[in-house]
Amino acid sequence: MGLKERRFTKTFQEETFPGLKQQIDTAAGFEVEMLIEWETLFEESFVHLYQDSYPKIYFIPLIEAFKAIASDSLGKEALRTSLQKVVINNQDNHHNPSSAYSFKEGVLEINHSPILNADKVEDRIEVLTELLENNL
Image (cartoon, rainbow, N blue to C red; front, side, top):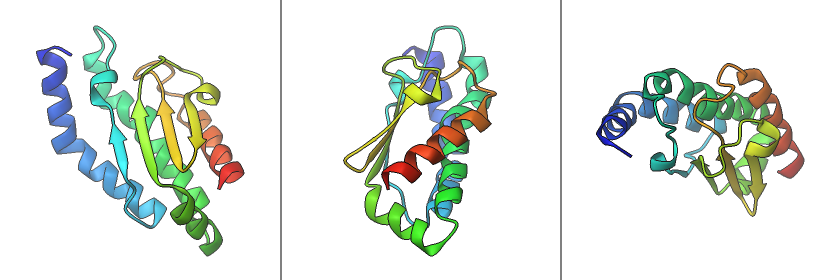
């Protein structure tokens, strides 16, 4: 990760992420532990897209899926008791939500390219919500 990427990450972490994290916690109904492997969330020459694509790929689907799951007391309790942590990375450059999400032993992993198919937010929300509903 070069200087340009480190600057973007620092700015995003300080200015944008706190509001997204608050929305995630509110949607879930509890403080969600998150491990974001920032150094993996880059592909060469795309820094100018990340301010728009990070929320669409990593955070909005999470917020909306948590809202759907936690829409009643049964869902809130299932989410609170089953979800231990969310891990966000780009280890394998997945761009299809069906292969980018996994839930195992209480850990929800989002392993998705930071730019590919960024505008397919609804697809990610749908797949993530279904994954959680089937595993909580």
